Length: 431
Ligand code: DLL
Image (cartoon, rainbow, N blue to C red; front, side, top):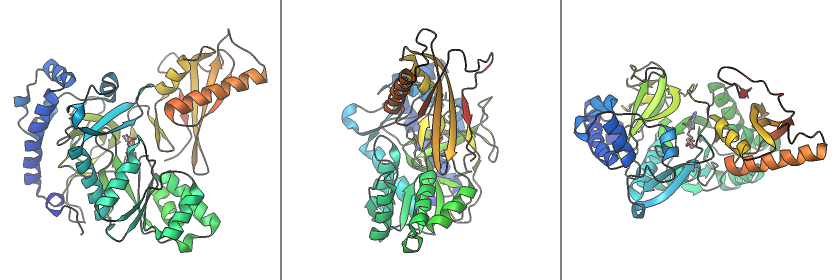
């Protein structure tokens, strides 16, 4: 077993709990300095001194994505802006992004987590890592990049897209590791097959994540690209990719639990459930300075286990994600909330805020069609008018959600109305 940080990765459970508890006490004190948290804790009748260790964690109130939205942009920051060295963002539930900040120490810890993830998969010095996650506000690109450099591998900031050039880089530079979303890996695999270059590839390992994928997809990717494919998980609110990652034993994703304390709670009662029982995954940041997130409910559904892993690591493991308890869709690796679509439509006078989203998969590419109702007032059956409106909405969606969508205008009152919880999404993909 090759470890980046053997002491932590093989730490006996008792020692790990001690370390986590000490870090938690500091993190709670930090969180208490943020007015939003202090108000939450006061409302729950909790003082920092009440949290003596991880056994008291359940007393703390949860943090939700909406808390970050309400605090937009920097209201959740626990460090002064002059200590913040990086800002990332991901989709919020409406038009506003969820903004996250990092001090230098936070970036270093995130990088260390990525270094551990890569090392546990045998990637290291001498490897050539092609980072084909998007570089930008999304954490995939830079997360992979810093991790790659930290382990001393030659790191290529290929970013996402331009498939032909990706394949050329892969062959000419001799990339040995690939980092991208699993759906993009499939696409690259298909393109490699078509170009007949599979035998020229030197790929050994792939770290794929940022969206759900199945073991069946793993088999396909491995066949197409001739590598071993592993699952990597993370979210920008907690740091980015590398919160957890599979090891070669493939018995779940090792959580970097000295930095991110995991819990699983029942989606209805919000009470912690025993290991092995599926529920909502909740993380508490133990060491993050710029944002001291306490009990952040990711809304991702999975299980946790703390029994021994065949690889020898002792850290807790997450099972593969099986879904979410909110309505967030992940389309081509981009997080999309239906409420974001609604807020775009609300800004366009010619349409009613009635819409229906159909998500599909054409080949390996996710597609999104948004059916939108015109208002009685602006209704027109002139093709020119309709097409102009469709183009305008598509532009607005692209600029707000960073995703292309096919817009289809429909007549007033033609989308189904529901009396109960409205069903606004039809997802035809199978994961
Ligand atoms: O997706 C960070 C990341 C980048 C992870 C690259 C892995 C690789 P966000 O954009 O904030 O961050 O989206 C986080 O994506 O709550 C999950 O619902 C989903 N997700 C992330 N990794 C996986 C995975 C990045 N391995 C949200 N399997 C999370 C399934 C995943 N879903």
